Amino acid sequence: MNIRPEQKTDRSAISDVTAKAFAGVEHSDQSEPQIIERLRNADALSLSLVALDGTDLIGHVAFSPVKIDGADKGWFGLGPVSVVPERQGGGIGSALIREGLKRLRSEGAAGCVVLGDSGYYPRFGFERSDDLRYEDAPAEYFMSLTFNGHARPSGKVDYHPAFTG
Image 1 (spheres, rainbow, N blue to C red):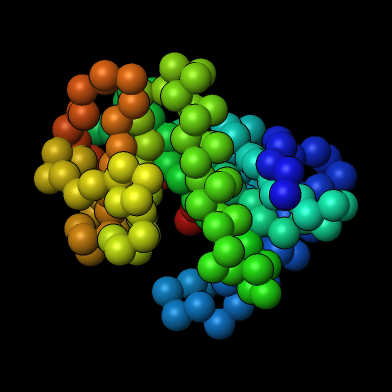
Image 2: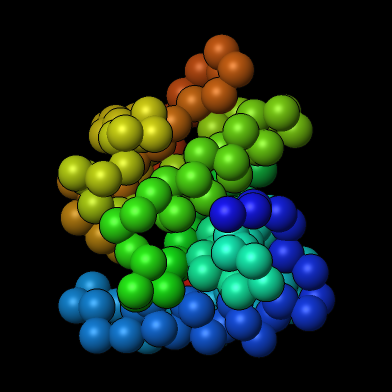
């Protein structure tokens, strides 16, 4: 498996992989491919990595800026992350997330937030904190990870408007 930044020629495959990965998922409204496209169109897709098996695109992860109390504090949101259904559970999503977090750290990001499974994301260092709030979902699903000795800010987190259309 090879992980690299997305290229223009990957866009259709990213959309297909994302749609397949979220098809029938209970917590999804099936808008994840459109979210990625809207982030890209708004120049807010800060980091977009793909996983390839040979020439087959089998996974994707997106990172975009978030605001805390309306300000840019160098934080990013992880998601969506997608792996083709037949390859889920094999470590592809984890590898994409780890590589993305490594790249964000190396670029000087202060931290990252994720809205997701509280049983999955702690393996990457994400944890619940009352300091950061995301008001559009239950608190137990919202986690954060600070980078490079930065202090965790406090406040309300807002994802890019592309997430809501």
